[in-house]
Image (cartoon, rainbow, N blue to C red):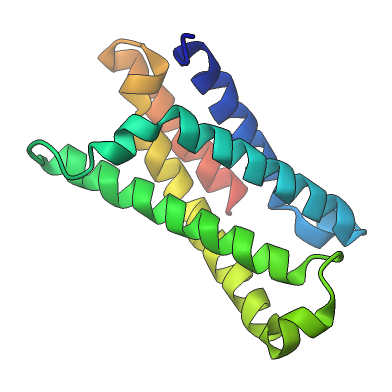
Length: 158
C-alpha cells in the first residue's frame, strides 16, 4: 500500500484539528467536545507515527547536517509536547474519576497548558522546515508558501 497518498491529508486533518482544539473552552462550552476531539487527535497521531515509523528507526543512522539536526529537534519537540498533551488531557478527562488523579490535577492543567503552547510553536517550525518536501513546489513558490504560513501563524497568535 502506498502510504504517501495518506500522509498529506492526514497532516492537513491533524493541523485543522489542532487549530480547532486551540479554541479550548472558548470554542466549546462543554469540555467533553474538546476532550473527544483530543482523543480523535490522539488516534490520528498514532496513525501518523505508524506511517512514519522509518523516520524513528533512522534517527541514529547516517550523518547529521544542520537541516537534519533541526528537523530532529523539531520533530522530537512536537512528539514530546503531543505525549504530554495526551497524558495530561487524559488526567483531566471527564471519564477519569478524580480519585485516580488525586492531587495531580493542578499539575495536569499546568502541563497541558505549557505543552500546548510549545506544541503551537513547534508546529509551524515543522511546516516551515519541510515546506519543500511537503509542497512539491519549486523554490520560489516554496518561499511564497513559507511566507504565507508565517503570516497565517502571526495572525493566529497576534
